[in-house]
Each structure stands twice: as C-alpha cells, then as structure tokens.
Image (tube, rainbow, N blue to C red; front, side, top):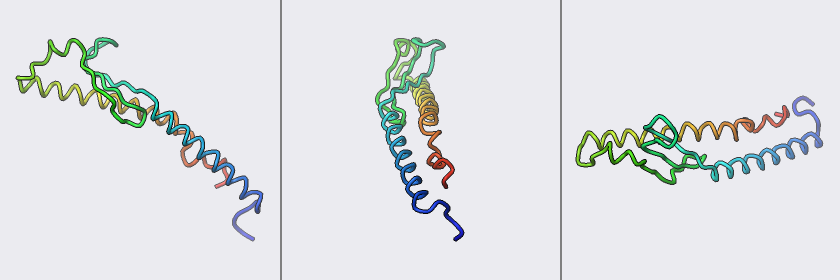
Amino acid sequence: MAGFKGGAGGMQNMMKQAQKIQEQMTKAEAELEEMEVLGFSGGGEEGDETVVVYMNGKKVINGIEFGSKISEMVDLTDEDDVEMLEDLIMAAINDGYKKADEAYQQKMGPLGNFGALNGLI
C-alpha cells in the first residue's frame, strides 16, 4: 500500500511527538506571557531614557514610564513638544515590539512547523 509507512506503531509515535510539541508550545506561550520586555527611547545610555515601555513577550503593554529628563524636554502646552512626546512613546513601543519579536523567535522558532514532527510529516 502506497502512502503512510510504519503502520499503527508509526501513527502512535507521530501522535506522541505531536503531543510533546504541543506541551512545549504551551510552555513557551506561558513563558512569553510572564516575560518582561522593556522598550526605550531617548537618551544614549541605560538609565538616561526619556520613555520606557513595559510589555510582555506577547506584546501586551503593561506600563509606560517617563524619565526625569522628560519634564525638561516637554511643555504639554506646546503642540510641537506634544508631538515629540508622541514620537518618543512610539519609538519606545517599537523598540519593545522588536525585543518581543526576538524573544518570540527564540522561544517558538524551534517549534516552527510543529518541529516538523521529527521528519514524520
């Protein structure tokens, strides 16, 4: 018979492998949810940032913090300063997203294509 090789034993092994990969994916998803990722903008050194965005590895933003220098830089009654603040916030979010993408690839990348089920598919 052409097609699937290995009979019932091969099918059992494939199902066990699929279950193992599902468990690994569930664990990786939970780790991404618990992970804290920081996105920064402004400033050249750590601790000198003007905006910090806190998010998890699944890109859910948990908070935004303004550094002490922001009050020196931004007058909220000045439209140009408000636009600059918006740009700084977006830059920090995008930095966080980039780091979250890297974390996602690190955790989930090896499981891509369901780990190819060790060549069984």
